[in-house]
Length: 201
Image 1 (cartoon, helix red, strand yellow):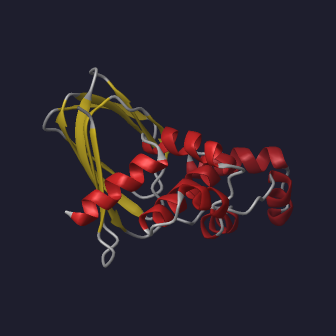
Image 2 (tube, one colour):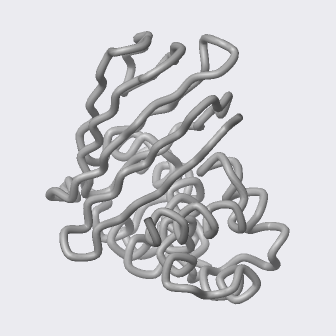
């Protein structure tokens, strides 16, 4: 039986994620301003960190620096792991740091690539290419990631899923559901229940 638990310490910002008997793939993403330390407790995963791909099996560890693009694919049918996200300094030091800060600060806002490119005085094509080179994700994918992170915070605070969808800039709840499930591995409702249960325990 698969099981998810999300526990966050409000005073330290440290988040612990526990997944048991899952087959979830996590697409390329980053953890802005967080170090990630994980251990596979059952099964095996293939984790891509930057340009390097390695397999981690039962009892093996992995670590990821802030802002480094990475993804996870199951190697065995199911796997279990525990990861800890610890706040650290965010590497906002590229030429497009002003765009990155805008997205992190207000992920719910609709900012077009044309508006971003005008702000830094380069073409839309070069903006997308340069942003992807600096952050491992396109501006759109980075914004979706930041919206989901904000949605997680709001769900933990007790807001309803329909409210959260609007608050983080999605057109409706089904859009939030699709993106949330893809990035987190479970639905917003499942996340809210697992976070509440973890908090109660």
